[in-house]
Every structure is written in C-alpha cells, then in structure tokens.
Image 1 (tube, rainbow, N blue to C red):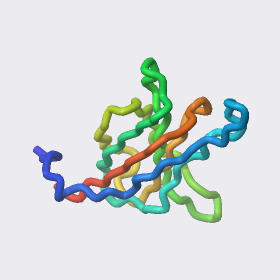
Image 2 (cartoon, one colour; image 1 turned 135 degrees about the vertical axis):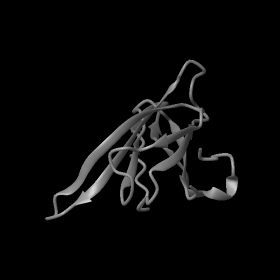
Image 3 (tube, one colour; image 1 turned 180 degrees about the vertical axis):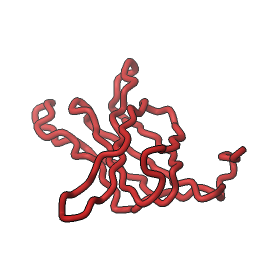
Image 4 (tube, rainbow, N blue to C red; image 1 turned 90 degrees about the horizontal axis):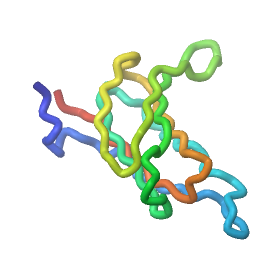
Length: 124
C-alpha cells in the first residue's frame, strides 16, 4: 500500500492566488482558469482550494480538469473532471491518463478570490 503521508514524496507544483476584477462591489471580470504549464508524470496529485472571501455555506470550489495534448494542432483532449471541495485537501488518482497530462482548474464565477495548491506525488 502506498504511503501518502511521507512529505518528501510530494512536489508542490502550483501555489497561486487569483482575484476577480471588482467594480462598485460587483464582479465585472471573473477569475480566469488556473492552467499550470507543468506536464504531470504521476497519476496521483493532491489539491487544495481556499478563498478568503468565501461564505461559510460554500462547499464547491470548482472543477479540476485533466487533459492530454493531441497531435495535429487539435489542442487538448479532455480526460477526467473532478469537483473539488472548498478548503478540504483531496488526493486524486487519475485513471484515464496516468502520465504526460496537464491540469486546469475552473473557478465559479461568483468567487472574488481563489488560492489553488497542487502537489504531484513522486513516490511509489
């Protein structure tokens, strides 16, 4: 069985905060998706999402999407999509594409700020 508790077997890939554009108390431009340039080589990642301005009743943080580059300039082919909860760290084992994939995270349009952390598991 894999030991995920060994912190030396995790690499922090992304720790980023984005803010919506707000004018007069209203969001005029929502937060753009997080799209790390990293090519993931492990099928296992950990994700945590937080928001300083989130209401106590919010639980949905957004969708984490897995995709792989496809040939002939077609862009990216979608693999798995996972709903991520707010504040709760989650370990994901992707089954569709286990290596050489990219991740993106879509933030709900009503978020004023969002911090996303992604770790890649390097152990076995």
